Image (cartoon, rainbow, N blue to C red; front, top):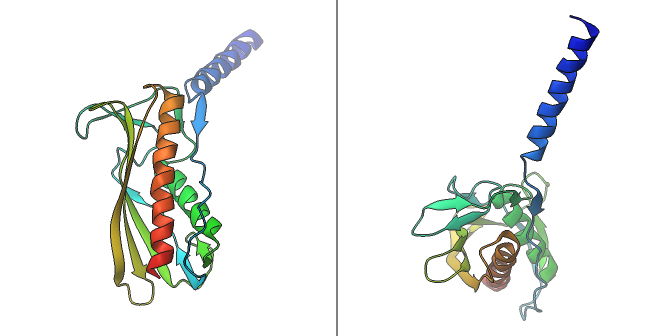
Length: 195
């Protein structure tokens, strides 16, 4: 292979890599954790594990979901969550629980705390809905499980819907963040008052 052919081959490889990098998301979004209002409950001397939420494959992705009718999804192009949606939501939930200041410890799996309870969650909806007006819909089922016995202590479904100013990524993510804020704040209050 001549020097020119080698250079052309390298140039082609570089162009291919740049093309691949350019096809990825232009913007990555996360969920900011809200500041909980002070919870009236006393501080609990318990430690809680927050496993990664479960979700159907349509939501267990970095893509930001849009649903027109029923459970059929499309996704915004050129934008994505900063990690898979369950991990992004898990980080927001953990931070919110920690910020209450009412729990002795909040941990992710593998962090080595002696756990009293697990807060197991399932993401049922986390999308911008176009049927019945443009709105962000977040629905999460939660179950508090005694880590020693494996018995569910309490369970509940949390739902929030927030209008989206437009069906574009930035306002849609703002609305999803606001809906998720409502869910995690309500869930944090529920957790603290359930123990």
